[in-house]
Image (cartoon, rainbow, N blue to C red; front, side):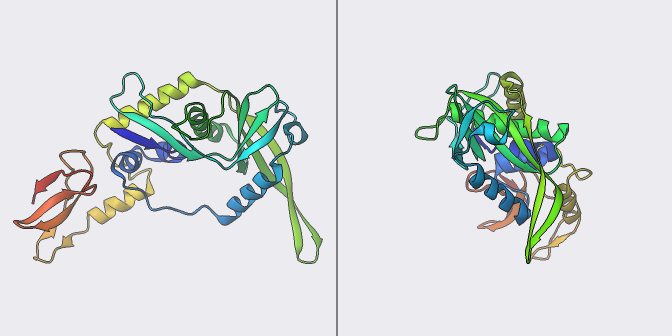
Length: 270
């Protein structure tokens, strides 16, 4: 198989629930989306516009000299096969900004609003490494930028509110640079674990730590009365891909069909 991996799925979803990660990437079944609060998107958009074409040393002394040259671009890597993995994968996503550094290399900068901490930095590290992998190994005409020498997070932490005039106020706060050391070996090991997880059986649900799994478990305990008056109490797994199934009615009566049909044609007798 060939898996599409988004940088965000390698962070939030992978850490949040392995069961839901495999359902989405391998079986195309996503958790219900929860929109990001609009204010964070507005702040990020304003930052990208404001820092576009700006010298890095003018707003972040910790960065090497360069210019912010690329903002919100989609990236896609070529298919990649890691040793020890049966399947291939490709990275597909959109970064915040990239700076072209004076030494000819590039830096990937991701804007965040909030308080930085070590746990978040470790998680976002995968996102930045995924962008670097895609930019240095693009598919076809996709954007190529190489080498990537800097990865990091620009954190805006509001701590002051000022009323400047009628109907106007501003938020002020520190802008801090959190560098992420590039470690391709560790990232490739992480990717290998992720692909091997996807190639294996569907992990068990995690109702104790995943709200979506908990919701599905509660729903699964509720009997579903069909038109014929039969009661369905358990949802079987697909014999072909291991994913969930749904009850259908065909020429010869009811049967279980994979939710991924027609991509997966696994069936079971009812």
